[in-house]
Length: 296
Image (cartoon, rainbow, N blue to C red):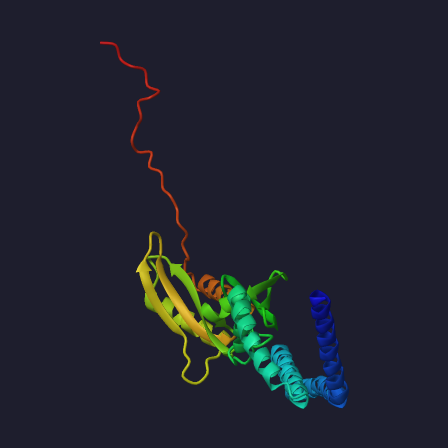
């Protein structure tokens, strides 16, 4: 009897509890419906707001990485706002507090597990808004050189001169130095050469300087600089430096190629020798290997 009485009380308690939940659900049903509608509305708002931001950034000529990050941030912020508004309509303040606390713990765990990925993501955000690195720039970094094709939240894509693509993690770009050829319209080119010891050094200097000035006009405070550097094994070596238009490595190579051809022609026309290393073998000493030995 006692067990039956306890069982009946337990069943009655369960039904009473379920009845109270049902009553609460019926009473709060309008709030549930309204919260769901509000959340769906915020999702649509986030979708169209992201498209609007993307369209505005396209008109301003912003690069793909900036548009990608901006649209995602706008979408996430609006959806989270709708989520919090929906919870507020349901009077779930305690649930909201628990959700935020749980999100903090989960976020910490994910952050520890994905340190490298998050590092690349934050580095991608930095690179997206960095004016010194833009899509289309020609850069040298981490042992690679090429044109920046894409900047995303994970890596930058560089197209090298051999037409191959290299993906470099964003954190590597932020931590390591990089050289950007495109940020400066003019660059200085250096050409090394040497002349024979019998050459008129002052005439060589004048001829080389005038030749470079005629091919590469200098602007403003720019000038062609000529300096002898050393007494080499077979020549007196010098370096000539001049400024030219260059926004990528190929421009520098073409300028150096043009300068070398011009210097060689100028030296040939004026009888100036560009020596190359030679080896002289002296046969003045007579060897007795093949001579017959004299008998004593």
